[in-house]
Length: 407
Ligand code: SF4
Ligand code: SF4
Image (cartoon, rainbow, N blue to C red; front, top):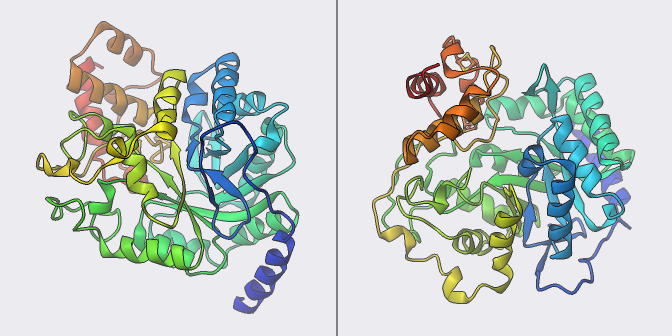
């Protein structure tokens, strides 16, 4: 099997020659970085897909237009809901060649919920749906969706699912292969495989303090931001830099923007977007920070990065102000989905966190009431727990939501 992979990789590398794409020539102050060895150049900050699920097509177009006009040229699409995919496809009409797309393989939409799968036929249907809704015949990076445990990695290696991913590359439907993970140990095994060209990894000043990978969370020495980085993470970043494997950053702001607010920050103190971005980009392996952007105001806020002063970017002393707390916080990433009874777990957690932080308002109650299922529907089956990269005690949070919102 190893021999077949070696031959395949040689063929795939040859196929990649000639796919060079330089940074766009635009009137913009955006800076660009190489996407590892792919020949592509990507904007230092880029756009996540989460916001497009919350917007209508007109607002999606407005958001995409501002992102493209500002020089952003990279987008991550992990969300497989038809609305998100269609909104992005609509917003990219006529400008597809200005955007480098990182789309996920191994995520499907079933019975109204996200599901992870390695079933080839399900992946094929979902990938063809992605191309159709994006109105394109290829994407630049085919990202193997969330591989967080050693068992998950071993299930990918040598599998029919991986053969399907290689096949997509041979057919030109994806130009490069990526893999996403929250676990540094697993990510390190993946990048050492030789076929991962782009790693999507969760990185920010808080997560770098985790010990032994992302699972389980452990509280480490946190007093000095320059010390105490998980050594496995250090090895991962060094390996990627040395071997020119691109790293695209997810959860730049701590997941759900937690680091931007002192009340929710895992480090007990608010960071600015510029400090979070500067922290990530200080590592040579990083190609781009993917930002979760929900609306034009957030996009304008984050675009300030292009003109930020060195003083605004200075993150070195922020974490020293207060003792940090880590672990068990929801980042609203949706990776725990599907819930066996259909609870939109991420949304319940988001509303609960807001109510706990700022108080329960009629608006929050109304939004909670409008959800299809509620905390009170949780059966404590535990099916979601192993899929959460952040060790959130989901059943307890569902109980807390029932107490807070009364259902
Ligand atoms: S434990 Fe509760 S929230 Fe998790 S899958 Fe089961 S019913 Fe859904
Ligand atoms: S419970 Fe975990 S997996 Fe689910 S949305 Fe929150 S952080 Fe993500």
